Length: 226
Image (cartoon, rainbow, N blue to C red; front, side, top):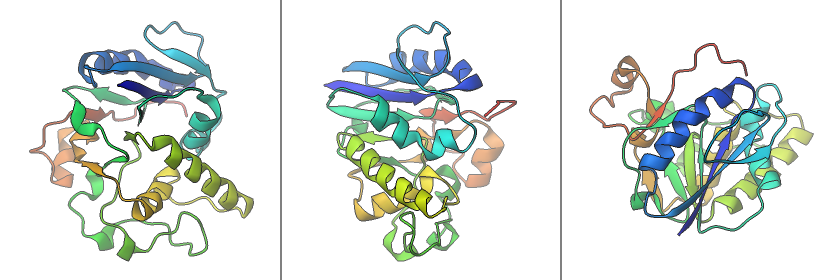
């Protein structure tokens, strides 16, 4: 299988990429042909990636417009596509269990919360709105993918463009939109927070997931210029 892996890292976020690439090479879908596409403004030499130029823009552009960045910048065709936050580390085997049409990861912070504790966009006429009665889980934006990932990215791009015309930015940016998309198009592969684990044990204890063994870690952000 041909696998595309998308990373977005402008400004100082590019400093996370070398270690993430090492983890991808060692642990991530090792039985398949992989190409790592790095969207960046950096001219630093980074082995093992295909660079696509992406101008750095201030927050929240890098997260709200991540689907724009990917759909506008990527040209090619693969069997599966995956997005990883640049401030991630892969620390254990991520294998064929993640192959599917739509692959979603349950958010560690909402894993043990009742649905009434989910933070969903409440603007009724917005494309990011979804009724709490329509959602099964709350999903993380830091790791997702699948064979139909680009279809999802294209639809969310259109939703964001429409909402921006009316001046609406949802509370959790791109993550608010994936809640609606997955409510309308339920993922066939649902991963546990092991694929998006907080870096520190106190956070894991707070969320009640300290017994889980991490496969992908979300690094605690320190002194990173957005």
